Length: 319
Ligand SMILES: [Zn+2]
Image (cartoon, rainbow, N blue to C red):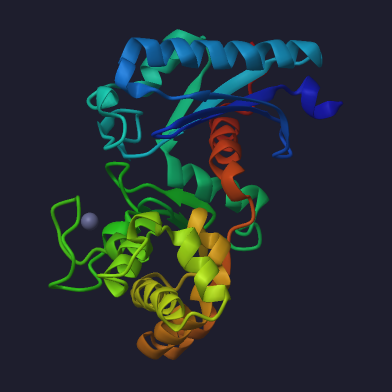
């Protein structure tokens, strides 16, 4: 097939727990996947050995369909410079201060792109998902934390230092909950899965079973009509709406795309988010902005990382 003759791309999704690899074609389809555990506590060199192993598996799979890998892209959580230098990655401390792009190129022998994981997701959604019909949008992921990735005029906007789009650390409550970043009242403290569970524990204080509370269990309770659980999701949606209103007024975006684990409960957040956004934004950008769920699910980062490699090196043939 044509896309195989043109070569395939390796997508690598580096999480705090899972290290996932995928062989992706030019249409954004996953042709093969391989999952490992990151186990970063073992240190940098054992981690690099896993990268070597995973890319080796993808190479064999590419060989098996008569294709070669043109380039690799890796998405990692943290503040990543445009040249692949890792300023800081809270979940992967052995990578702090490392130029991961240079190291992965050396290890794999492939031209490599490194991106913040949510920027990679945003680019995947832009090419193959919920962002395909928009040229300017923000992707927000609601998981353990809250991440953001900005696409402006059809290009990823990473900022002068590569660290733009950190929507999770936008202040939405001036004297609010302290955040791991050192600020207080960050969106992450109100709209992440962690925050939803924290809010539920606070609402139940003194009750039994607090330890078992998770964003999923709060979602289940909301679906059964529990008013406290419904309010917790509405509150999270309201804070998202405050952030969305600011973005609408500043950037006049077309869409605010919600991904990450909490997006499974998107319907529980949506109305409150839209209502708050429309109440705060000017009418023209407020009516323009659509708040919608992501389309690629947990493969967004894998597909997006490969798509970034395709963008950077796609005119080359396989090696
Ligand atoms: Zn913060």
